[in-house]
Length: 312
Image (cartoon, rainbow, N blue to C red; front, side):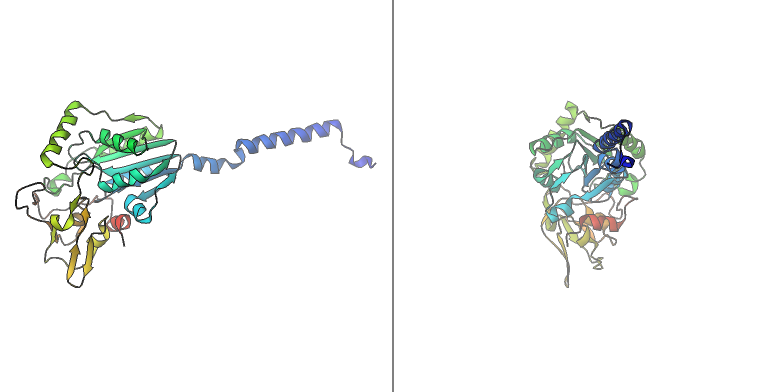
């Protein structure tokens, strides 16, 4: 035997100790700390936007490791399964209810996450929007740990002057900071709803006669018209989340179910899209408070809306 290669008892113990320690480090994941940290913080935010408010909020909540995904684009691709440590959804409420596309999406979606949150934007009244979303999502098998609302510029043209709305301080940065802090600590909380708010929503539904299982879902050709101011730029074609607009040799044509998100009328650079006058005076009333005023979130570009909603 070659005595030069002889291992002493002390050397053997040292080697055994080193092996045990390195194995413990590897099994604990310390060797891949960076990758584990990235995985731990992975956040997916799903959003629906017509005039940019929700896209702006989604971006602010994204953080460094979040992935922003447009719901209309996901539905076009047929993508409904997602897995992350945190999954959030940001959408606007119409008549205190989610857009119909958001309803369709959540009913098909399979969201695998330790923490799920929803942030709903509104302009004037939220009523029982939080409870409505909780009910819809629970029935779909997607329970949300955190549901909150944030007030934004109200872009409902039949009732508000956009030039006046943008001047109102709605404390968006302060409210956004509070929500961001809640999400950072994974707060489990639903914004409370009062009985008065529930009654207001019931009265609204009786007045509008909307289907509570659908919400706002109109026919675009019955809601809007295109005037001679149209220059055929195709903006309406690209911003409609349902792809209801078509640019033809005879001009812009529209047809199909309309979310009433106002992406078309608000983002038309020529203001060539107008509400149709309602003959019987039923809702909507077919008029704008200020026909010359339009709105898109100041932090969001027309190209951003096109990327989010383009169906072609």
